[in-house]
Length: 303
Image (cartoon, rainbow, N blue to C red):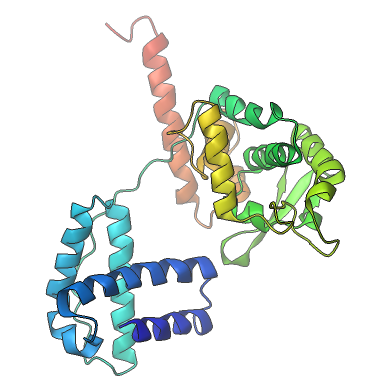
């Protein structure tokens, strides 16, 4: 089955232009299925041999995922990947029909983002400033830039030195679909970034040819995984271990901007959302927060 999976991944890369991150997710999902199938039918069974039992096998696979406490979002993503895989096999003539066409993925509700309060953001951002090392000063610049811009972590680590215009106070990044957007950043973030670029980055980088803005211990570009490890340490130091993920500062940026009076369209553009309905979830969130504040403060609310 793995041979067919690799053919499918090659199709997604060459014909569909899928990103390396998306391909890695597909590979992980489909190889997990292959492992499960091998435990049921043995390692020699090809897709053609077990396709007649595919729907029952997949139902067993989903049950196995649920027993291992996978969230509905994860199960739904895996089912979608598997259905796409079988559609590919039909198109390639390796199967006569997609045995999973009628199978529905688990219902997934749209979860609200989980921002943290302004005071907690400040507590998190203060952690690198307590350490006077080149790495900590780099980390401070990264965290300040994330909260100043609302960028995704993948966008942050993809920045080059020339992506930042300190003179005019903006950062240029490539979002989903390679769409470029220009995001203004406030003066405090500019000062921290200027200090990092002029004083700290030269200590971390090993080659003058390196273009990456944020540098790892080996002198190359920092990865998303590297950033996640850094963030976890600071979140734990700030007492926010279970409240902070790589997306937290993005969610917090959007929520705090709308709470402060920014209009929805501006926040949509800053976040790089293709559809404003994606941004509107933050409006719902700020409305709920306003309601809680009202109920807690109004003298007649509890009567």
